[in-house]
Amino acid sequence: MDGGAGEAVLQAEEGAGSLARRKARWAWVFLTPALVVVAFVALYPLVRTFWLSLTDTRLGSEAPPRFVGLRNYRDLLVDGFFLDALLLTVLFTVVTVLLELILGLAIALLVDSRFRGRSAVRAAMLIPWAIPTAISAQMWKWMYNDVYGVFNDLLVNRLGLLSEPIAFVADDALSLPAVVLVDVWKATPLHGAAAPRGPPAHPPGPLRGGARRRRDPVADLHSGDAPAAQALPARGAHLPHPRRPEGLRRLLRHVREPPRHADHGHLRAGDPGEHLRRRLRLRHLHGHLPGDRGVHRALRGRLPPGERLMVLGVLRRLALAVLVLAFLLFTVFPLLWALLSSIKPSEELFSTPVRFWPARPTLEHYRGVLSNGDFLTAALNSVIVAASVTAASIGIGALAAFALGRFKFRGRSVVLYAVLAMTLFPQIAVLGALFQLVNALGLFNQLPALTLTYLIFTLPFTVWVLTGFLEAVPVEVEEAAYIDGATPLQVFVKIMLPLSVPGMVTTGLLAFIAAWNELLFALSFTQTPDKRTVTYAIMSFSATTSSAYEVPWGQMMAASVLVTAPLLVLALVFQRRILAGLTAGAVKG
Image (cartoon, rainbow, N blue to C red):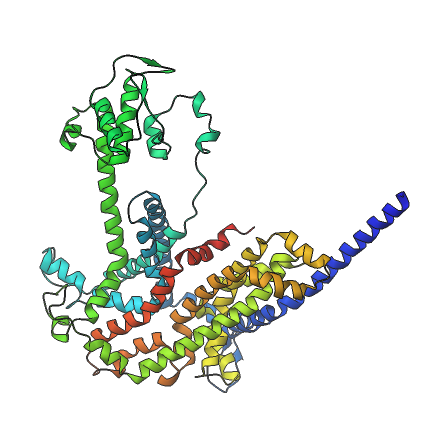
């Protein structure tokens, strides 16, 4: 028996080792497409960029590069224009990061408060993120306009704080704060929405031994653990639930007339603490107290401590409402102003003082945009590119995520962080090398050039997020399939793919929105109007729809609304999945 048992153990160990080796081989098979893409669109451009920085070369020139060593770096370090730009970039980064961190935490605390309409506020937090950056720039540029902009109208005509309009963008002293405000508007709400929610400060009531300690009514009220659903002892009887009319009348009577006798366990009925708990309970459930003389008595200090706390609660709710309204105005106003501008006739659009609401709404700007063949072609190009990038990212990313999330093999962490490192480099850092690569492949001014280069920023987060989803699948499901004789490929196709559909929907949405919003590569790798994407087309409106001295703000705002609308619908409908995908990387080990 012992010999047979030992032989069985050895066979089991050999089988486990064989399965582990087979998994390791399959892992590299699944990783191969992602590694090829990483090497092709990220590693090679980075190495090529570094080599070009050591040479004297011109993009598009047929002359071979001439090696110059570190001369380019020495020239940059004594170039005043470059040093000024570097200093401004550092200043911009430090200021925006600090503001977005502080305001993001404040917004997270704000939306964690309980108030009516909190779901709508959380949905509104995705609006700035969903709007393409190029379109956001046009919206704010219109609001910053020194003649017809809404900011100058408020400061000069409405509030009288300035005697004449100011040029926010053209003024050297104001251009940086203006850009900082735009970046804070676009990034901060999302940071607040994606801020991690910590665990509760204390375990739920049943685990805290509440019967063995004296309750603090104020702390219970703020922690959401007030004994609102329990009957209060009063004059030897239990009060009915205050949501019922008869219970409310009886509770009011006991609140107005504090009990003066009777002992109920560890609390005396005449104790002010019991009376305070009743008033806090009523205030928490109904929002007011009969007989309350108002805020002015609290400010004069003539209210008892309990009533002062309740008045302060009213002030807190009022302050919360003001903060929520201010946040909503800050978040939604640029899009609202673009919408209002898009339905104003031209004479109202370029009138002073600025009209906030159109007197004669019109759709002429929308008709002009929809009759523009170049815009419609650009919209179709954006759909084609975004859909193809999304499909490629999910297909390649799912294979890599399965290998990284389910298999243990040497080099796993290196591969995972190498994929993530693709997001650390700005697009401009590899733009020159990618331009040469696109030219060498004969893809310049072709849509496949955009599909290929967009993978540099869509593939990393696809792999990262899907890895987290696949890691969460119980290992027993996979082991049962292997026991039945399934291969890793069969496990991936028949088990993991169906289970990871929610994750693929999330990453697909993020990849589609990122590809739809991209501008820099579209601006660099396409040239003719029939190959432009929709963001590039909107940037070109001033050259194609009007004279050289007029910017068609009405049509630009109409086009911005049309381009942004489908993204907003996706963001609002799938807000929970999008936020889960955006924050998934924060919980990976």
